[in-house]
Picture 1 (cartoon, rainbow over the protein chains, first blue to last red):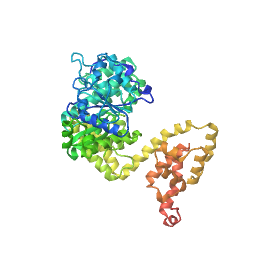
Picture 2: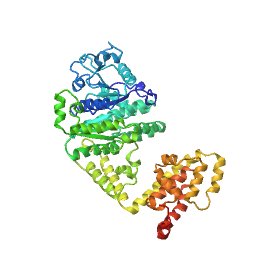
Picture 3: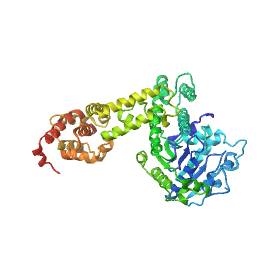
Picture 4: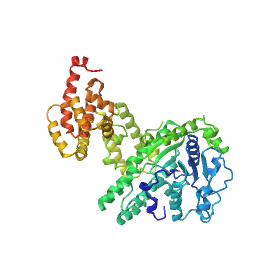
Length: 324
Length: 198
């Protein structure tokens, strides 16, 4: 997790009133279905009448365009990253789905695929200014700063997990990274920021392993910052989706992970819902068409639709209800 | 979110304050499976000694909330804490002259009609009180109308009345004590029930 923090990124209170709502879809682990979930949720939100932009945030492994049925994208985020183009609008294109536009990420310069820090700040600001209701961002794997920043600028990004230990392990690392990065930006005092940086290293010699330990330490150093810390903790609500659930045990896993987040990490995660295992999902990927478009009646589509309707609920408390 | 030690017992079991015994049992079974050795959800985080601390907290929550007696005592403590927290906020929003009137109001018996009068003096709608206390406005109305048979168990009603009273700037506990005497009398006396509005 490199890169230096920039206050510009963390301005929850200065968000434009009518700006686009960013919906980053991450999870740390590759292959858990982030792109599948992102493509289908984007399609469902567009179908519900929203103006949606699907952004491929995976500059080193772009394939959101394929999932949305766009074989050869004309524009690419890569041109913006390379500073050849400043207007994101010119890089977007229509998809076969009405109301859904795509910002692809093909054709990256493999030497320097990621935007510079300043460029990334600019990108997030420009994404918020897009003329759209939702901007769904499909994130790459890992917890690199280039991935995390899209996630941590939002109060309620989506974390996709698969019911297997490798995914769980990476999901915790992912949420932890997002939280600490966010925290580092929210803190003002130099001493406290230093402590947060120490805490980011899991092997730190101060014995700070969880946000809870860190809060104690911060409160000790600076009670004012402690209060700000608590507020940051309170506002951070990553939302969990269990993908490819096969058993009741898998479905319950979402509650279990939420419980670990709340009790161990003191992160107020929510369980947004699950998508069950469905052979139709695999064939939709082969057909290069979102499942909800090709097989809207398949069972996985039904569960995806439930999740989308929660995202559309105007009241946050409605989103925070139990899934199912 | 606050660290575990500062989370309430209901939050610890992740149930609502009016959870039924069955819901509490289910939540406890789930929590046990989450925090047992080798659980999938705990993968990669269970190496630390913190897990023992969390398990103890879960056990404490279960022991307290499954025992009706202990749960009532805990709820009462919660109400007192909420009461204490609500008082200064209510006091801040009042002007001193009105507060002096309230001192007179705070004497004698409190029935539903009197609560309603104080509320109207304050210019508050039931919905506003509902928003602050998180009590269903229908129950607040039943409290004013003294529809005791339509209200839930005493332990809940007491909490509702404390919340209501604090909202209108009255002393929650004193009002609740007075009001609950009326409530209990009605419940103990079936003849009177026949005449309650239904």
